[in-house]
Length: 466
Ligand code: BYC
Image (cartoon, rainbow, N blue to C red):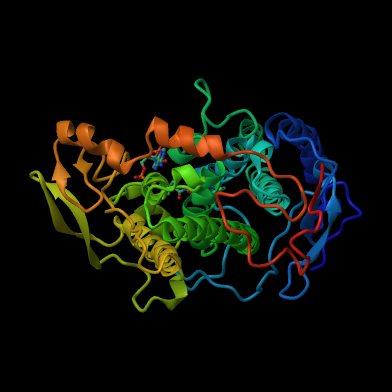
């Protein structure tokens, strides 16, 4: 399963044997490169110390070297095929997985792949200008690593659209390059991907909270009965782990610096010392977490019930679940607003699968809060707001819930929202700290240095040549 880098499009799917598909993808490639040039990283660089996949197996799948960004070899990499794999859930449970798309599920599968594909270039667009204010060469390199891999994840979805969905798949692949994050006329599909990522605190929060939605959604698509989608997602998840590392350690380092300044000056008011106050960090958590919760869709969804029953999208770690994997009789409890009160409601487990996945995600998010509170070591406490806080999608949309889970009226919300969400003054302060630090080994003063370099390299290594 090694990857053929001799081809114009590196791949491990024997693209050379399917001339039609190869030609179709080769004709999509210039549009992708044009999009990368126009919407990808705005900071000009000579080359960047990047990790590239060389094989998909457990050992040695990555290789590190300085690469000029436009020369990065975006390609198509699927995890190895398990010839005995069987469908783990839904009405086709126990049958062999599909190597082709069954006609009756074509539209739904294409929709899932398009939604997934749409998020990847969206994040590159959102992060386009961050290089101009990178807090170090180490961070700059990590940003570009994330960006090239999101570009590759777009390729992963485009391959599926071209290879399995005919004409409409090719049209959808073209449309993925035409929508743009935040565009008035043709925005990206999901809400969070039209928000701005204007500063590095937002970037670390995005890679912690929003990339983590990616981890969980890819985890459910990895369970899919459509084997090429499953194998694609399995490999994407390996790359995704680094994106969350960037988020986790990025917020670690901001919190560490804030805690140090709070201790040194025995004060919360650390703006005058160039740190990010703890209440601003909390507001950024509140914002990015709530926007990311919206990405799970509604708590009750016939879409997700249909996806599950059909075998298109499973649960997180489906095979570890100890039930019938059909869920036709099962029920679950989900909090909703009933008659103006937050109430636990019993729902069919099948239609509540978005809430099931969201629950897994929330538990994972909470591990970061434990980490950051350990770093703060009593000097302050950070928390995850209530699941109903600041929501635009699902049972809490249209209601106003405080971070500690009280339902309030609109007027109270308007009075207090500045205490919970970043204000324009908070954003302006954070923005003001964003000055580029491009000298090897140097780090901006608003965050602590990283613990280790990349791939065993020292911190003062020239990770990026400008
Ligand atoms: N914004 O039945 P409902 C990643 C739509 S992130 C706008 O409640 P459903 C990454 C929904 O599409 C992972 N619209 O929800 C991270 C539906 O519209 P239609 C991305 C929204 O369908 C960082 C209607 O509302 N992958 O990889 O069960 C960097 C009713 O929806 C939103 C996926 O999401 C929203 N937030 O679930 C880079 C996986 N939420 O169909 C990458 C694929 C819902 O009625 N997608 N809507 O017109 C899915 O599985 C599902 O589409 C969703 C929604 C989970 C998103």
